[in-house]
Every structure is written in C-alpha cells, then in structure tokens.
Image 1 (cartoon, rainbow, N blue to C red):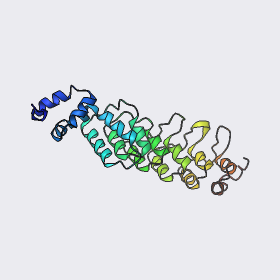
Image 2: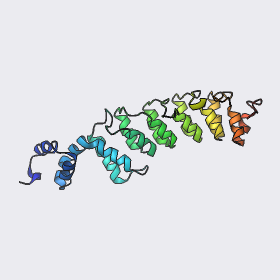
Image 3: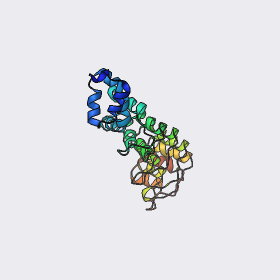
Image 4: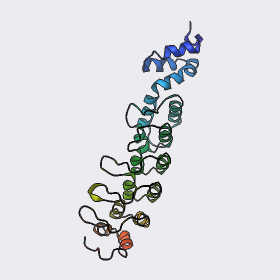
Length: 240
C-alpha cells in the first residue's frame, strides 16, 4: 500500500514518531505527502528551520525560499518559550531580518536579550522600530556595557537615536569608562546627533571617568563641526 493512500490522521501519527532526517525525507517523497505532513514537520522542527534560515541569510530581504520557510515555521511552530538553539532573534536583528524579528517578539519570545542593541549597532532602523513597538527594554546592554542608544549615538544615526529617546532611552546613562551618549556622539564627530541629544536633556558638562567633556573629546579628535557646536555652550572647557 502506498503511503499517500493512508488516512491523513495515520500519516500524522507515523510522522510524529520519526526523527528529523526521516521526516524530512518523507515530506519530500511526493506532493501529497508534503501537503499532508509539512505542518508536522514545522511543528516539530520549526526552530531548526528558522535557525538555519537566519544563519544562512545574507541580509534583508530574504530570498523567496527563505521567506517561505520563515512563514511555515511561524505558522506551524511554537516559539512562545524561546528557541532551543540560542539567540536566533539577536542574529536576525543584526542582519536586519524584520519579518523574523517581528515573528518572534509577537509570540512573546523570551530570548530578546540584546536584540535591540544588535539592531542599533548595525543601523537597522526598521528592526529597531519593531522592537520598541513591542516594548523591549531600551536599556538592555551588551557584554561591553553599551546600550542601543550608545551604539546609535556613536555611529551618528540620529533617526534611531530619536526613536530610542522617544521610547524612554536615558540620555544620561553611563556605559564603559563613564561615557554617555552625547560623549560618544561628540567624540566620533557626529554634530547632528550630539545636538539632538543636547536638545533632549543631555548634559554638555558631563565627563568621562578620565574627566573629559564632550567638547574636549571633540577637540582631541579634531571634530571641528562638533567643536563649533559645543564651544558656545561650554567656552571654558578648552583643555584637551
């Protein structure tokens, strides 16, 4: 008797007893078996499929096949308790895979960890928008102690900075060596970002653990545009 002639309920029972390799082979045997068993495949191995897709995706947008795999994984899989294979959402955030990130956080995924930091570091504004919309912790920091706002400020990504500040990111929070977002922006020569932060309450007189102000960092690094912005605000801070 051909397998495809069996009742769907029996096929599903058989499929649930197979390991991943055997189940994948069975699903690919013919179109009838594929349509009958693909929900089982993705319910049992959806995490593996999603993780594989994210690992091998070059960047956004996904290929048609990758989009199809992602859609099937979210349709039939359960990610509400997180992925067993680690921080899939962080890797997706770093690559700008908006649909994957939104799919995970929309299922109350518990593996958000540093996803917002990864997205901001790689300047994926669309991913940042998704994550803050789902109210992830805007103050989560990476292993170096930097938050999403720190990375956005240091790269001069004012739109992402604005999004984070609008969702409660603290412009006064200190990271490694006492740096605040405005100190990072100034030291890296991002005048527009520094100006935005100052307009939203950042302290122009704050100092690093070494005692350097934003103006002094800008002068030391020869960031002329930032110096021009800050000198009228802190005219006495000229020593570098």
